[in-house]
Figure (cartoon, rainbow, N blue to C red):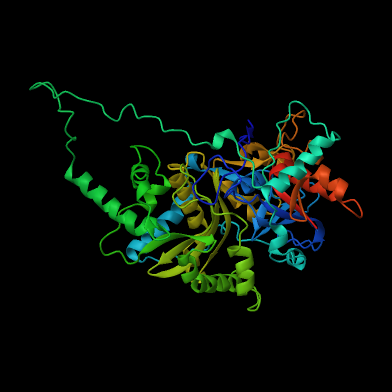
Amino acid sequence: MFHRRSARGGGWAGHSGGRGRCGAAGAMPAAVVEYKGWKEGYGCGYCGATRGKVSAGMWAHSMTVQDYQDLIDRGWRRSGKYVYKPIMNQTCCPQYTIRCQALHFQASKSHKKVLKKMLKFISRGDVSKVANEEEPMDSHIEDVATCDFPYKSESQVSQSELTPLAVDHTERVENEDKDSGETKEEGNVQKVESDSGQICTDKDTPVPAEPCHSAKAVHAPPKPGKGADLSKPLCRKAKDIRKERKLQKLLQNQMGTVEGSQLQGDQAFLLQNSKSKPNQPKNIEDFILVPLPDDAQHKLEVRVVRSSPPSSQFKATFQESYQVYKRYQMLIHKDPPDKPTINQFTRFLCDSPLEAEHAPDGPECGYGSFHQQYWLDGKIIAVGVIDILPYCVSSVYLYYDPDFSFLSLGVYSALREIAFTRQLHEKAPDLCFYYMGFYIHSCPKMRYKGQYRPSDLLCPETYVWTPIEQCLPLLEHSKYSRFNQDGKAVDEGRLKELGRVRVLHKRTVMPYSVYKKRRKGPSDEASVQQYASLVGQTCSERMLLFRS
């Protein structure tokens, strides 16, 4: 069974105020990227090959969350503002995008063991010195972190060159191509809108909320001896009331904050999820929200702070967070003291091209890039770097204080991020997946991600999702495999019209067909063709490819 990517509408409107019809005034700039081409034959941190890796990369000066969602659904991934895609049939260790179906996730025995270990530590101070069975989610960033390639070619383009001119000028340029009659569009291809800001669809128009038909169910009081009075609340056991009060108190202390505000809107969901049905296996929330004794030895709090643009809380905790990262890189990854610098930390784990966006039907914290900080007794012990996107929470990296390795914080943070995804889903119904980065079957130590079930891998040729159980036999046979077994299936998002690729040239937005006629010097068609083939037709028409 294959799961095809959802064919969603176009771009998202403004920086704030959510999705909606967009005009020229106040429209959010489109994504602007610089394609850097292929990098072949550099070192691999997974298999140890000195010249085995092959990937394509681009600098993203800015990017909407919808653009990035569509890119990771085509096998791309970011590290800082550098966005890269392994060339799967050529690289030494093929990296398959993996996602967990968070709403259906069931913790395994080993996962529950980690949750219980944390619970015992918080409540009683028990310390188990058992070795870590699994590594942190994406604790490896060898693709770019140990390679100088991305930053040797760091963009030198000024901000003014990346800012398009007025919309009317752009419209005139794009219409130039239409009026020339040289480029004929097929009748069944939807016309590209000429607004330089972004492309919007009718789907983005807010829809009035449906009235709740069950909101006012009127019940007549029963006659004496004929049953319960439905107009009054049900009688409840004192024990249940006490338990609920403890859970509510626990929520305030333990579930975490988003920029200093308690996540009160999701308390009902969390309370409901923390009550497993009789004879049903416990879920993650049962362990996270279990009432703690009054004399609990420790206090754990999870805070979600926006990292880009940096919020006040992020700035206030930057130095403490960096020190945790530095110790982690030196003691866990054996980096020399001069390698994990503030500059490196900022580039890879704080900088992000993603625009901060809010939508009426989105999560309260909005979409974009965040740090999920784990505070133990007033001290940061771990940080999960995450992106909140329209359909998923995407794990970027995790670092933690090595003194707390015994808590298996890599596994624990992944489980918390799955629970966080389920929590966000209550406000944002489309957001229901947890993306775990890349699954690398050819590297045994990186197979642990496959233990978060149910999960799917992305077919590297047709970009459809396939249950991991169907993929594993294929990967045992060959490290590179096409998962879609329909031989006639093709990439439906493939490049079909190169002339429609959007280009930003001399501060002017134009289709590639116009740019090609204006360009002086050697042709760059091969590079543009390569870029558009990798990002797909939709993103190539929505994002702006910078050309000098």
